[in-house]
Image (cartoon, rainbow, N blue to C red; front, top):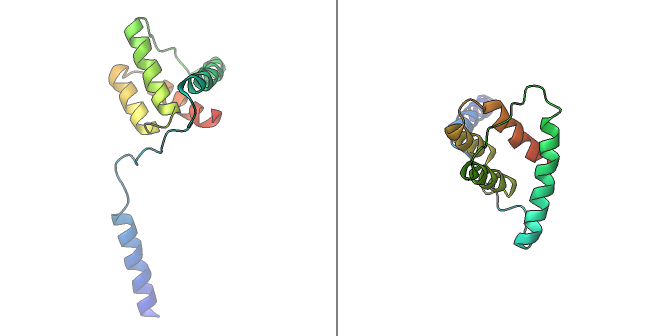
Amino acid sequence: MKQYLLFAILSGYLLTGCSATKDPVPPQPLYKVSESQKSKIYQTTMGKLALSTKEDSRYQRIALETAENKAWFRSLTYRLWNREITKQAFVREGLKQYPEHRYEFEFIAEGFNLQQ
């Protein structure tokens, strides 16, 4: 009986010691279709997500005033949508550019999870 208890305790310690502290490896891209089809699906998903931001009073618009910022944001959201990066990486990258918008980046990341 003591052996089983000792085994259970040691197993618990080993499992906690092996847990990952970094972002998990992102899954493979979501859609294995042509780029034009991916673009259409992505645009539809972004449209739904944009509408859902209007329903959330806490969501503050991210000022994407320049073409460069818009392209950066489109690329970042596309990589998240296509599962090329993790939610944590998406938020981290977003906060580098817009540190005051944590809620918004987390909202977007969760929204993609709900839309898929």
